[in-house]
Length: 299
Image (cartoon, rainbow, N blue to C red):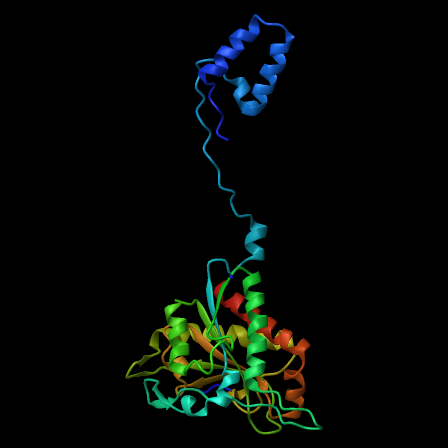
């Protein structure tokens, strides 16, 4: 729920003299000469005294088509933004501080949503969900050759704030940024959706250059996510497209690189919650997002 990867040796003078001496000596010298030859390698045996061979140029092994296919994201940078932070619950005053998102001022971050606790089973928080899916996503992307940057890894007390999350992607010059979330809508509202930026030009926000590529990124992820997870686009927004355009999210407004938010499902609906709390399903979710990123970056 957004709040918002030997040159051939030329024969030296001592070696040349050794050959001349061996021509007048008995078999023992032959053995010694053979031993000396062994230290020079086969190429040296074809060089006569005083002759200089032109060294062959060194060759750097080229990538094979198979290697390229296995690592299609080599040289690409992807920023993965796990929505919220498990520590936000303990730092409500800090995350309530307002930051500039271009169009307005908005709270630094929120705690996110969670599933409903029931039958003695504790609620599963969005912050825990997003971090788990982000770890799985990072592993999949790195296996495909990408350099992956996480905006946080629960390695700080709270945050980062929404403006800093955008800045991390910008400073990494990321080829794509994906913010991982889960929604907190009403019971009966089911399915995933991908939030893409609206065109915003106000204050420090200018999404003009990223609107089109972000939408393409969103479309690729939505298609792959549906195919891999077997879930449907949200039935409560986006008109069945799985896409939602928003202008009120600082993480999108302040981004200068293609970026989307992926709402993987509705944590407040029991049927969606059963999926979101399944490790096997979360792996599918990460796979779907990764597949979408690959298809986007490969054009």
